[in-house]
Image (tube, rainbow, N blue to C red):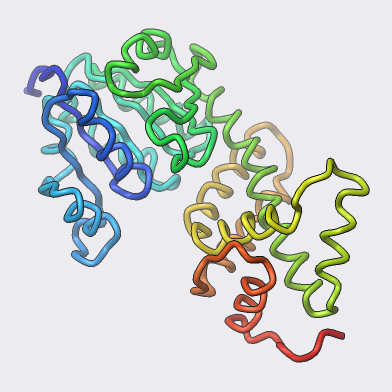
Length: 300
């Protein structure tokens, strides 16, 4: 028999970048005990383990022990683990608990996770993070979906989540919004990376960047390109998983996901170079070319 809800108790499933920020911000809302579980806790050197140590959090021994009695469970794992995380937590979820699914998974995978959570007696809410979480942290814009989204939106400020907006009472629409957007955003990251890697070979990177304002609004395109490419280098593994879910979302709509699948490869490749992220475009591209074994001679 599962434990009843303990008001104010919060559990985080996943303690990566998003999980850590929430772990830092949610206690400020005056909530109760905070528990955390991450499959990477098995590795003391993992990012999740380092985050737990830095936060002074005692890692829970299992997903079930972390979520037991929690009023709010936030699932912030990698995109590919969305359904598995729900399945692992479901048997221990308290009746009526909120299970907020922040994972960048396809509408189909969100629906599968919702079915598991709802069968446990907990309330499933999908949440799509619509911006990088760093600048606005727990006040970042979240699109909510599912039959409990409206009710959770009323409670969200109590949990320190002030940027929520209800997208739909149907599970999957918030995810579709997020991932169709990702086709553009992560696609741009991949396009800038590929373009600049080649342009640097020919010595025309400044000309390419300068020409963008001929067809796009005036902007600091060199800075934007540096930002986009550095995101691929730093977060490419996670972005590749997200783009795989974006491809599934596109395919679920009956469209061949050619662009999304290409972005999966480019994001994964950029992350695998092991290059230190930097915002300055030319040094970053040179570091990527060097790591990839491409020539660094005089541009042609």
